[in-house]
Amino acid sequence: MTLEWVGLRCRRRLGVDRGPPLQCSGERGAALVETAILIPVVLAITFGLIEFSSAYQSSSVASAASRSAARVASAEALLPNYATDAATAAATALHTIPNNEPVEMWVYRAAANGYPESGNFTSCTTNCIKYAWLPTTKAFDTANPTGNGWPYTSQNACNQNAWDSVGVYVKLNHKFLTGLFGSKITLADHAVFRLEPAPTQLCP
Image (tube, rainbow, N blue to C red; front, top):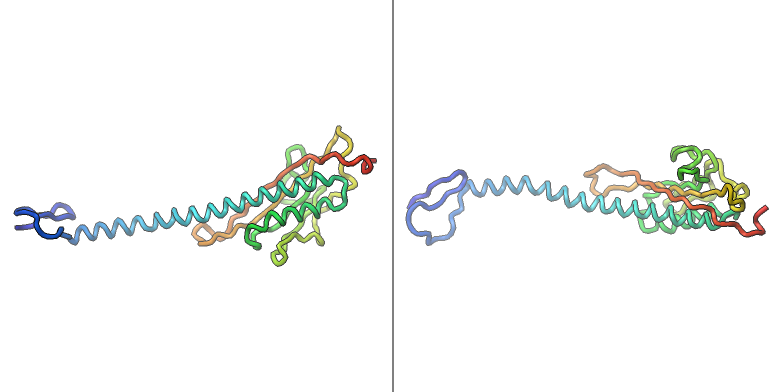
């Protein structure tokens, strides 16, 4: 019996195949090449799913935190602690992610388009309160707010002709685990609620 080569494979040419399957070096080499090509692709897909699933979860938490805080702020119209209570609500919602991810939150009077009156989320300058995140305490630094503030006494929750809306913006820096897709990605979301009608005794 002799062997006949076909490309990178070999087969028996004569006789009956009674022995164990032949393993030709060309076949083994092709398998190794295919494996070397496929393993990086499979690993990239696997780690990509892990990384972006984690980022999506952090993004969902930021969205939930902004909604929770905005809901609290809208329910406490014309009350002095509306902003700090909103910060507490946001911090509670953020406890499910690593404590080094949150960066800051804003509580602001929302314009008609839902954005701050400054027009964007780069400067908290008009009727806006900014709180920085404190990783050690897993809370926002409500004792040292920045921005020019939004006094609760100036909120309009009594006159239906010009009702104010409150917005809350939450920003995170999500850290990637493997570093294959960079070190981090910035995630942010905001929510806007119209102020709830204030009690009669609080209205001028």
